[in-house]
Length: 148
Image (tube, rainbow, N blue to C red; front, side, top):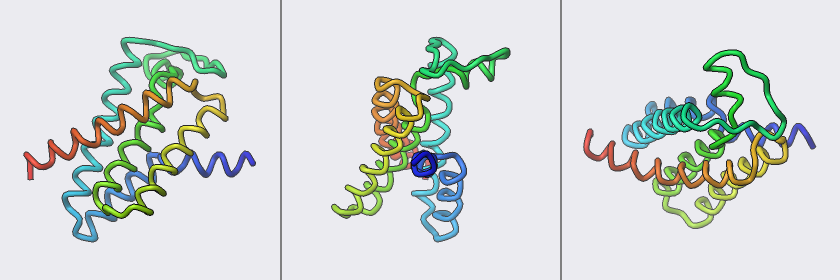
């Protein structure tokens, strides 16, 4: 069961996100690739900003001894959930297919649930992460539409 939870968390992992940016670019989906890249940058930037200004210990407390390890040890908001929100929203907007959209939304919710089950986040951390992720996705669409 732990392996399934780890695999689910990977649906919003940084490696998969980066692979999707590159693959969408190579497939000629330049706008989607740019939206994913902008969304990822905004998600990371917002998370670092919030965690710099507000520190909340994770459910399973994590020690830290530097600025970067303190950012990583902070629970709010969930960056995995935020990336899942960005990714699922952008893919839903891109494919515009009901069943695939429902699958993408389910995957984002599964990532959030896995983070709570693993005691990496509280429920409010993942809810905020998902909400920020959806907002960031729409902001990235707007930014890319202005830039490209």
